Length: 207
Ligand SMILES: CC(C)(COP(=O)(O)OP(=O)(O)OC[C@H]1O[C@@H](n2cnc3c(N)ncnc32)[C@H](O)[C@@H]1O)[C@@H](O)C(=O)NCCC(=O)NCCS
Ligand SMILES: Nc1ncnc2c1ncn2[C@@H]1O[C@H](COP(=O)(O)OP(=O)(O)OP(=O)(O)O)[C@@H](O)[C@H]1O
Image 1: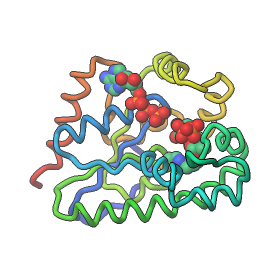
Image 2: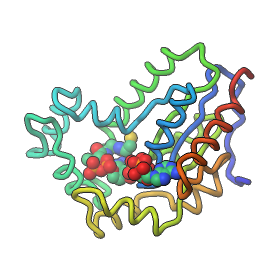
Image 3: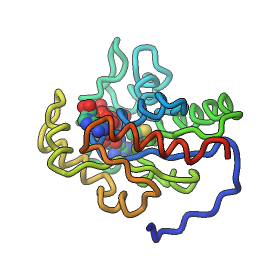
């Protein structure tokens, strides 16, 4: 069980279930599985992609602060990542541009789903940025480290050095597991993961 102090939130609708996990642990796959069983998901990372994509609302602000990192396709994430991952000061400057816009999008999502029993907030940095204080329960996706590495190293543009820099920024998997209310094991067949997710969703329906 977790030993960190999370304030007891008043029961409210919808119940906010935070979904998080380290790079390559299977968050996106798990989020899709929640949607399959009828739980709306706010995908913070997808929102960042939208805001940074072609015509995205943050492209101009990012170009102004990080010249040369955008083009007709919006933000070039490889270039921007090379500037900020591993550089605390620069990353903080990027976060100051991105996070408020993501938070506003999350508020709009919650307003749209006011009548639901439960929604999932898929937030990669739930522990790192303090979002854990605002959710009613936390589900962590987790798999053995060797499997995580194998999944991530397959991605285009990924290098051992980049993975190392990213892992240094993230709360370690064992800490996330210790803080979780639910651990979603993704090192197993997807059918089992889906079954686990159906069970978790059922805990919050029709309270
Ligand atoms: C730095 C960027 C351009 C790198 O993009 P890229 O497509 O190369 O990598 P990706 O987004 O998949 O991130 C790789 C890994 O780094 C982690 N990461 C990204 N941003 C951060 C951050 N601010 N702090 C800690 N870890 C981070 C992600 O969780 C992921 O596991 C991009 O992540 C970004 O714009 N980050 C700032 C916005 C942010 O905080 N996003 C995180 C989720 S909302
Ligand atoms: N049981 C399982 N549950 C979830 N993912 C699985 C499972 N078995 C295999 N996988 C695979 O593991 C990979 C996980 O990638 P996914 O993009 O979901 O991770 P992620 O945590 O969202 O990554 P990131 O943090 O980098 O965005 C996918 O290719 C997925 O198909």
